[in-house]
Length: 171
Image (tube, rainbow, N blue to C red; front, side):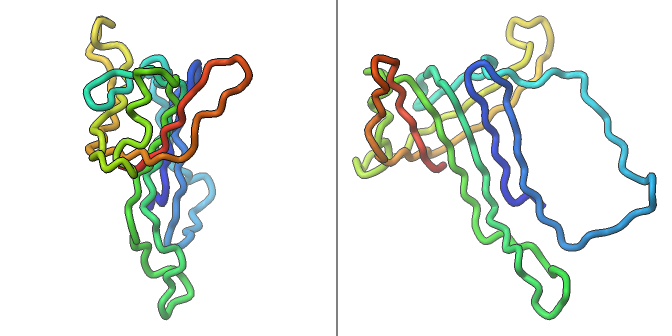
């Protein structure tokens, strides 16, 4: 079972997936019987293929991550020398966006947090080809019904460089 999966990408890079897996028992197979692997000819999603929309407004975003954590109980042995089950204790979806700190993004700070404002609906959508690319295309979309970005800390001002606002929240 997948315990945690994290999707992340940043400006100029590709969309990366990291998965943490848990299993009940190890099964040793015969030599040379490893499963076959079929490699797709479709290129990976490039970060520039993505569009972030929060509350119906598209935003520029420097980097993005989305973690889905099923919080599997990995120490359930009951009366057995091997795991008897991997129950999910919870499901937590957390997101992080780094956006330019501007008058357009300041309203996202503390959205749904201590300000009492309800959360924000949004999505990040990656599209390869399609929509003007001359083909049906491939699409990967993360939909969030109620994002909450509680206030954490003020943005860091690194000398005379651009200021970014890091939004960490849960869906």
